Structure formats: structure tokens, C-alpha cells
Image 1 (cartoon, rainbow, N blue to C red):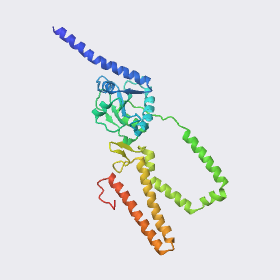
Image 2 (image 1 turned 90 degrees about the vertical axis):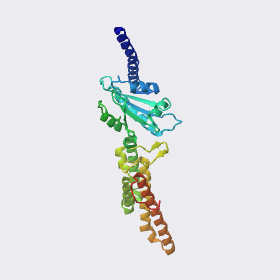
Image 3 (image 1 turned 120 degrees about the vertical axis):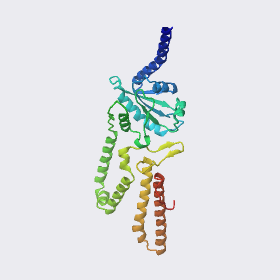
Image 4 (image 1 turned 30 degrees about the horizontal axis):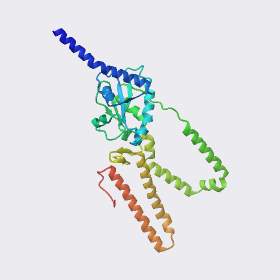
Length: 317
């Protein structure tokens, strides 16, 4: 009897483990034959993530690619995710501790979205081998570029690999063509346009102001950190990132516009208004542009207070 009991226990254990191992084998096979990304549903997601026999990491993105949902960040991140998965695909045959890249669309995994309490997309988790709990990738801080995702995966995964972005010469060719056209135009109009522009102090003043406004609004920060354009939340589009150390691209455009309006107001008040001959009109113009300056600066302070709620000051807004 004890022998029969032990045999029955072994058989039931094998019967329980076998489907899970088989499911993992199928998923690994799919990863090699689907351009590196495995499409999941609720059932295959649970089989892949919750199986303790899984000896490889899983980077799974929960997304919403259906056109009816209109998830712009999902469509923006998808090419980067597939590009990284395609490059990592060749490593699986030689690296035991490899990473499987998978995606679960909202239309195929609504139950999983509900179980995880997700109300935004995309959301990406990396699950180390044999572990159920995953590490969440912060899109708001890191953005959508594959290089940032590689840094995240290399931090949490035993697999270390470098991402090499394919060279795109389109932008270089376009820049060369535009520079050639500009050079030809400048040469043909040297006496009428090019020379007066180069030797005019107002041209250099405007160029300097444009560079200053562009840099102070956060353009260079965007080029380095590659943040998203905006973030979709349950309350709609979020254009301003929380905290003073983060920002979105849309936020840069808004702040740059405010800075430009403030700079223009100062220039008008110091240069244009004093030249008005009529005293009444000059006074009215001074009041008007001073009001515009105060209101615009109030909006700027309001945005700063919105990003940093502990800031104690405000103006009219």
C-alpha cells in the first residue's frame, strides 16, 4: 500500500508539472519564430509567469494596440520593444539565462489587467527566472527608447547585453540637402539678405534669445533623457510630470512658449513702448503689457506649484 501511495503521488506530480513545462517549451519556441515577441492571452500569461519551473526571465509589456482605444504611447513604444526583442532573439540559443519578450494586449487579457490593477498602458514588467513578482519599468522617468529599457533589464536580469540601434541615414541625407539649399540661397542673395542679416545686431539678438529660450525650457534635457510626449492616465492626458526633476516633451513646449511671451513682453516694454509719441497711448500700452507680464508669470508660478505642491508662493492664478 505505501508503494501504491508513493507511485500515485509521483504520477500526479508529474501530471501537474508536465503541462507547465510543455507550455514553457511552446512559448520559447514561439519566441524564436515570432520576430522575438510572444503574444499572450490571460491563460498563457498565467502559465508563463506563475510556473516555478521557468528558468528564464520574462519582459512582458501589457499594452492596448486596438485602434478603438487610441493609446498613443502604446503605438510609440511597440517598435522599440520589437526592435530590442529582435536583437535579443539570437542570444537565446546560446544563453540559458535568456530573456523572453512577450506582450499581452488589453483585448486579450482584460482579466489580467484587472488582477494587476492596471488603468494605464503601456506597463512593462520584468520577471526574473523562477520569480512571480516582477520589476515595473517606469515609463514616466525613463521614456520609450530601447536603450533605456536595456539599462533597466541589465540592472535586474542576470543576462547582460548591449543594444545596437540600426543606423538610419535618412536624417543625415535630409540635413545635407537642406544645408546645400540654404548655402546656395545665401550665396545668390548675399548683398540683399545674407550680408545684412550677418551684420545686423538685431539678428544676433533674436538668435541668442531663441537659443536661450530653447535651452532653458528643457530641450537639451529632452535630448538626453528622451521622455515621453505625455502620459495617459485615467483622468486623461497628463502634460506636466510630477516633481521638478522630471518633465514631458509637451511640457517643454508649453514652458518654452511662456518664456517666449515673457521675453517678448520685456522687449516691448523696454524698446517699443518708450518710442510711442502719444502720452495716452504710451501709458495704455505700458499698463497692458505690464498686465500681460504679471498674468503670464502667474501662470508660470502656478505650473511650478502644480509640479511641486510644497512651494508656498503664488500670484494671481
